[in-house]
Image: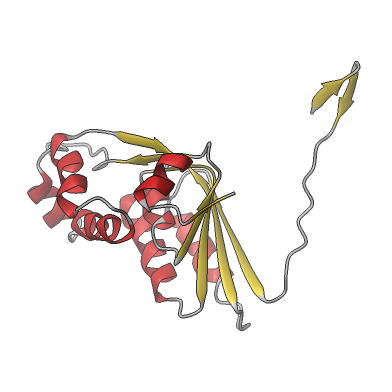
Length: 181
């Protein structure tokens, strides 16, 4: 709700969905139920020309993020990932899978090695890679492929246990975002 002249005005954006395009919305924490929703939502038996994945997430479970990432990469048709606010951690993993990657200039992204409990330290990437079947190594290679930064750049962020934040405009300059809206 927005107040204009003392009156509350409801702002809605109507979006007419195209029947040739399959729309999936990944908002909030990424967990196993997110994957189940994405998997069942994308197995409706219809043939689409294009798949759009709208993402606004602060991240979540690493294994689930990679399941969704692999599912998007496996789609043979056009896939578009759209950042609708933020794509942190696992959200960025999913975002990176799109053939076309769209964001607004003010979107926020976070790349890091994750946060893990127990005796594992974030900087110990070898132990993490073994534990998670090398998903972080896969992500570093993917980020190097879609950006103008080498794999070593991304791996150093993980090894140092740093959080690397950037916005949509910066992501476009790095090549991560293919189109700003």
